[in-house]
Image (cartoon, rainbow, N blue to C red):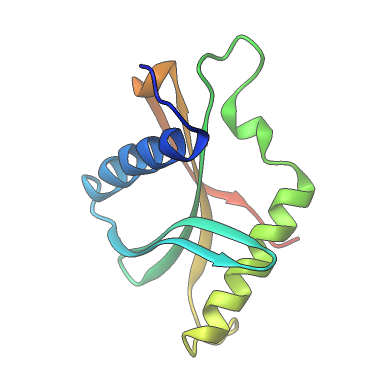
Length: 122
């Protein structure tokens, strides 16, 4: 698959991840929430749980799994950005059931793996 820009490639695989998750019953709340501290690719609900999703793509696994690209600094950015989203939408961190999932995509989108609770706030 030939995509011309990094953004176009990101949009393509985020759409693939969204379709994958929606087919499993999740409902879209927002795409590409941006704040100074970072971006959250997808925000969905899974039952009564709010789910912040990071989408990662690697053409192949020859140099590692896509999930391995989420380092501790990226995790901190995601958590901080999610906290801002929660505050902006009048949700309390203590009263809202939420989690951080990761969708790892390999092999030009033919292999999609959904990892629930992939990122912790510890």
